[in-house]
Image (cartoon, helix red, strand yellow):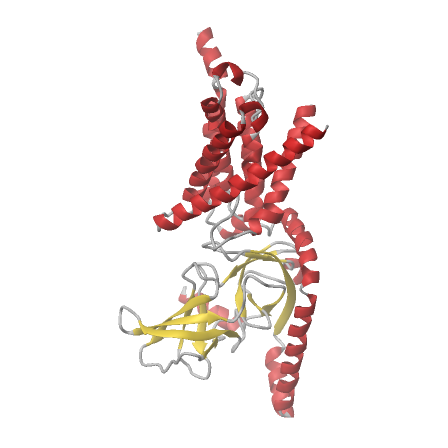
Amino acid sequence: MDTFMRRFGTFVFVALIQILFLNRISLFGYVTPLFYIWLIVKFDSYMKRSGMLLWAFFLGLVLDMFSGTPGLNAASATLLAMVQPGIVKMFVQTERYEQLFPGSATMGGRPFAGYLLIMTVLHHTVYFILRSIPLGDWSVLVLKVVFSTLLTFIFMIVAERLTLSSSSKR
Amino acid sequence: MRSLLDYLVKFSYVFLFIILEILSLVLLFGFNDRQKLAFMTSANSVSGSIAELCSNVDVYFNLRRENTFLVEENARLRSMLYEFTDSQIVRKARIMSSVGVIAARVVDNSVRKDDNYMTVNKGTNDGVEKGMGVYNTTGVIGVVIASGKSYSLVMPILNGNTSISSKIKGTDNFGFLEWQGGDPYTAQLKDVPYHSKVEVGDTVVTTGFSSVFPENITVGTVSDVQRSSNGYTLKILVSLAVDFSDLGWVYIHSKTVDPEIIELQKQLK
């Protein structure tokens, strides 16, 4: 129950940050950070796969309700939750995966950064392709993905730093 | 058989994944009906009231500017009042009697998407209905497309589906104002005949043909005039009067349409 409440806390936290703050950012007209995938990035290997999918789906659905895009965030977040364990395994040895809470402390700084980057690129590509259907201008789409990825990545690195420093103080 | 069942249970998350994805995609591509859209977006009262809480904070930062707008508008109305002679006021008042203006506040808004929507904090309880025009002291904003009890969803000019009947001020040359996406400060006035005299700097106002808007509400100013590709009409770029990224209070124009007009329109259909 404790882990459930903690995860629920993270859920509310990322949803609020996204709705109240990040959704209002729109650099150059199309760069919006989608930091909420932090919840999915941090899914640990003790979780059930179906649990992961449901958490991600409902997070996406809540965000969709506030951004007027029914299904958009839900679809891309669910897909990300589906491939998350596979991507984690790309960056750690199999035996260590058995009990892993993804983070720079457990995975090492560089592998974790690589993991974050792949997760972000994947999610943002799906998100922006779905959002801009019917596909018109490919160059704009690529720009959106690249710069939003960059911004989300920076936000997540900062978040990781903050959680690390707060946990080391304890 | 047993192992098959085990297998199915072990990979049940795959089915869950497929179901959730299908559900999301149905939501994403199946929601064309505006009423359903209104439910999903902030016109639904839960997210509407949260959006209003956020904008409650924003409001304080804009008080000074909103005040200036109101004083300016007061001044303009006063000067109009003095221009009318008594009999004109009486006549005007008779026309205006079927017209109501509802003041509302924008609680949720976007300008950077391909199809933008905004939410205002008045709904059917306050007399707001689908099809009413929304404007503020600077100009035309959009049209109400759905309303809940206490919130309404507005489709602003900055939406690919909006088309507003507009004309060049002082002439009868009218066309339809549409937005091409991208730049939130510019829209296009289409279907104005080629022979019309339109110059850069001319003011574009509403026609008042439909009962959505009153006549002569400012839409923007002409920033560029070209001949359109079919050659019979002009392609007029209009720089919009309203800054959509910065909206506070708005007016909703509610006019009870003459039943005779409704009857005529029904016959057409």
